[in-house]
Length: 370
Ligand code: FAD
Image (cartoon, rainbow, N blue to C red; front, top):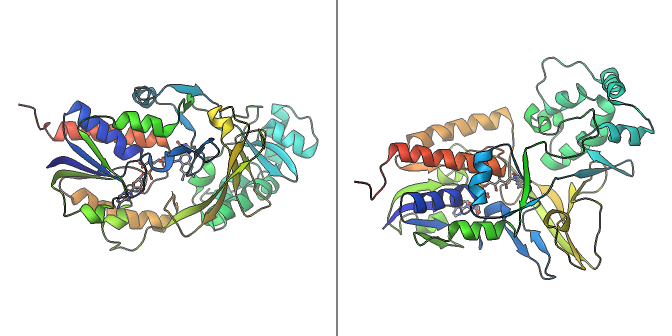
């Protein structure tokens, strides 16, 4: 008899498993249908011995001291500030668009004030701002929109930016200065020995049993558990009764090259050419010294594992119907990116899991409490 069955060994499931086991002394069965822990953050040494990430680049960044401190119990960190270049008109230029991007692309030598004017003279008036296209053309104008956003977004999401909610483009800011960091967060680090090691330490507790390559459906009625935490797709949990929640997927092509370095930064985006959206070179992220280097090419697709909830109003409506059912469930908690159909970063999922733990503590006395 387990106190908890937790479905999914990604951040959501693993953070909660550790809290319930260590703070409430309760027995947890943690299952995942994949052959490994860590969810999408899983990393491993490939055949050449290079540490790579199976599901594409994961960079840890947060403004939450609580989230950072929590994870710091299970890993030491490597300071890492993420920088991305975009291959545009045959040049490698910084993205998010900043002063250097415009100066290099157009052979100019503007300062920040002049760049503000330059953007203002090109920006198109949009009112109200509803779509991703509106966000970009109203900030930097149509030409930069075409060069940096339209092709990339079409590849990434399979639809025109004019069909996508404004929140998608709002994730990529535009800067008037020369700051070329991809993220502005206070804490920007990579786990020193990788994500999988961090998860191994998190789950190393006598109250936690882990079963891999095990689908919830196989166990649903086979094991005894008092409560359930589900971090898989919410529509799947309810047998798709309101239809499928659409996701965008990715096909990853991993390659190892017989040279030390392939590109100047960890990630290069391809908004104009190529079928792939971006190329990641892991050694920039991990700091590993190795005579070879490993890369991942990302090809967006409709079929495959669910990665990105598609942010459109009609999908949010379907999700709301599932959420109503979820709220009515007794002794079941839905946590994480797939179970709440939200485009959450890792730190947000950790924050959500810790908040869920606080809620559980309020609502349910621990098994061994008097
Ligand atoms: P997941 O990691 O998806 O874990 C859910 C687990 O549940 C999976 O392992 C799945 O196999 C398992 N599961 C589902 N259904 C079942 C079932 N029925 N039975 C058994 N097991 C089941 N975030 C950042 O902060 N920084 C980044 O740089 C970043 N880059 C990303 C790049 C890509 C390509 C992607 C796809 C995501 C990225 N993210 C990034 C987001 C990050 O991956 C997520 O925030 C985080 O992994 C979500 O954790 P989770 O536990 O909610 O879900």
